[in-house]
Length: 380
Image 1 (cartoon, helix red, strand yellow):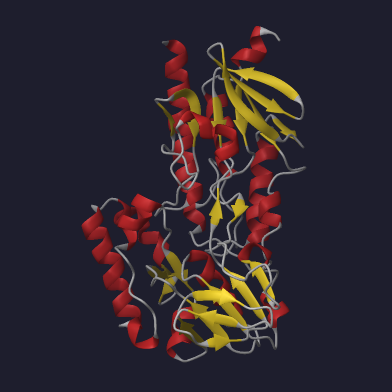
Image 2 (cartoon, one colour; image 1 turned 180 degrees about the vertical axis):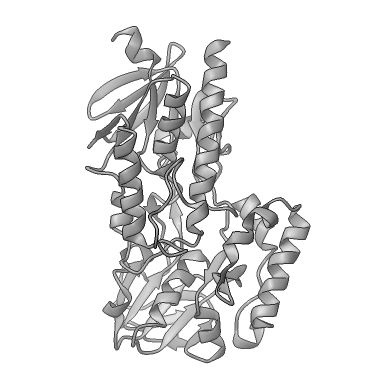
């Protein structure tokens, strides 16, 4: 292997974070290659349900130097996001190798060895930009394997009209759960239930047609206690005391939880009012699933939904790649984000945590910081 190959930075993942990193490195004269397991840009977005939109405003969700086209909605939809990512990759002629699956990352003689598609590639720096929602996560509920009903993850939602005439149980009052409910209330479904262990920290997408996310830079600049108060006060002013409708209290402030345990603040687009109107019934969390299709809740009550959807989040899938280096927490999320860890210099992570200003915005900022960090380390 030539010295040129060794000097090249390997970026894993051609999503927004990976492409932003390669672009930032190129601007300062550092060569990189992006390894992407899919056959084209934006494939994870293409697999998402047709109705999905960003919860972040288009002004904070654009790739560097490339605005969304005129007429794009404030919260761009799936196809608009895919087109935007494709346009960025094409415009900058990013060095993406498609169909490359990374199997392991290891340390060899002061370099990082990336084994992918049966070959070993060496680099002084490796940037992991595979995303925080790579693998759908579903708890091991009692009886789930023998369940006689239909149980799916939110990743397999499809589109809202698929559930016309069907009763649906959504498990989880987080970002995924409310995204599903925001769409389901617009379809002619049967009964909708929300099984909630904890109440959400949630903000409306709009107040009087003004996108609430436009105020995120101000909230993001506040200390935790004050930002929590802003989110909590907004939530109460919009919907009052939701415990009257069966919603449990949130276990902590929304911004504090986002920054400490990476719990994203949910976005409401009608679901909260649907709960107040009785369109959605809040019930306790699930205790077990039964072979006859019944779902037993924590309070002993039994319901029989036509479809149960687990809005229970995702995992990074990084344990098998870098778990031996002490750079991950107990859930498999990197302990650092936008930097490298002291245990593994030259192994960089970004795009792994939610951010008030949005994941696209954070990825672009972190990409710039990582590019500077790699440049500094090479000068030293």
